[in-house]
Length: 223
Image 1 (tube, rainbow, N blue to C red):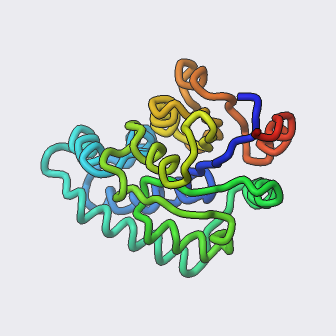
Image 2 (image 1 turned 120 degrees about the vertical axis):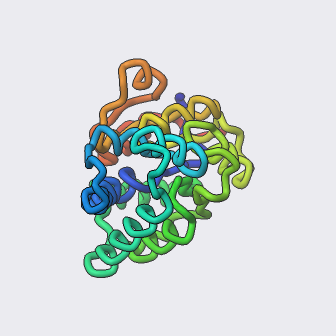
């Protein structure tokens, strides 16, 4: 990829906000209450998943009787309480990157496995909503990551060809989804480094969003 993208597609949890770690912590507390093992290696397997794929993964990890809806609802409530009291923690470099993109009139959107109502709420709380032209929540895509649906939906909504967009993701499932969509992806890992095979599918693997501006600065303006 040598040109600036026409569309920047941001994941949210673990990419814009440090919410993936928070969600894992709150969920682990509830898992322990219910007598389930609370392991990071289990949690990272669910990152980026939603809908039936998430349910299947949870059943695989915790058994067919796992009360997915109940534990998910309690976890979300605990996260929301924390957010109301403390606000969302924006990851390093994200504000600077969004300002840089805005100055160049590059369209930005969020495509998250989290429900849209929560994405929009957290963006408002952080004062970031004005940077994004639109938001797509996990419930709006027919299939969740690692399938490409949500990213292709973002391109369609923006009227941009997949090859002219750029995804920012923290998870392996996000890399898989972007690759399947034919969209270049930069990975900024959060809870887990991508495997060598998946890292090879990314334009770059960076340590933080602070490194994105220097990288994009070397790209040419789109025609």
